[in-house]
Length: 234
Image (cartoon, rainbow, N blue to C red; front, side):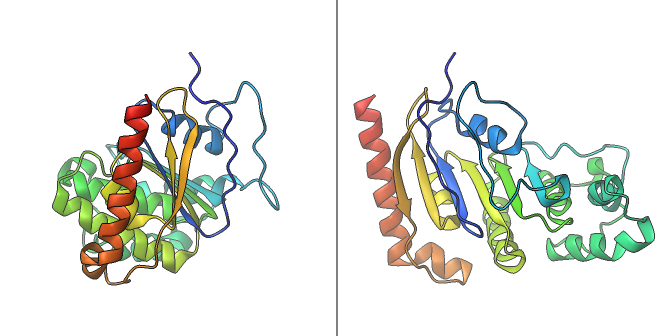
């Protein structure tokens, strides 16, 4: 079954690109193609100046996918261990990243001892600890309650600004897309095509000011109308 059709997309270094669309439209497939986890039947994927090395790309899945027997710190240390970084050398970076995501004091906790939101924070820390050039996220907050989801959105945007990575984020929530993105790409129902692109307006940087600003609410309305038109066309 054809998942995507006629996709032409340029992603600028340092932008926060959100892929928005209905379930089953190929958002996750496109993300996995970018990550090299799947291969396209035709077409090409080009990186400039060169494809990111394993340590330069982070991927956060819908589920945290943590090692159940390992502590939070050891889960975050995993990609550094794979790169050959000694544990003693890595622990400072690991602890700092956990602290940046509100998990100071939980370094020794196992996944079963953490809430769903905390497990996702560990997963984010693991993806960010190597300082990736490219960060790919596949609906990482979809299963969380709204309060936890807001906090993680705030943390992710803050860390993106601090780290300077290029982010591609998949969601079916227009509220999440409007809050996080510098650009939103709307995909049509399967086979997924690029139906529209929307540069995000300049928004207040304080998270709660962003969520209540007129520009944010207007952007949500723009995305909502585009989704409605897409539904009517289908």
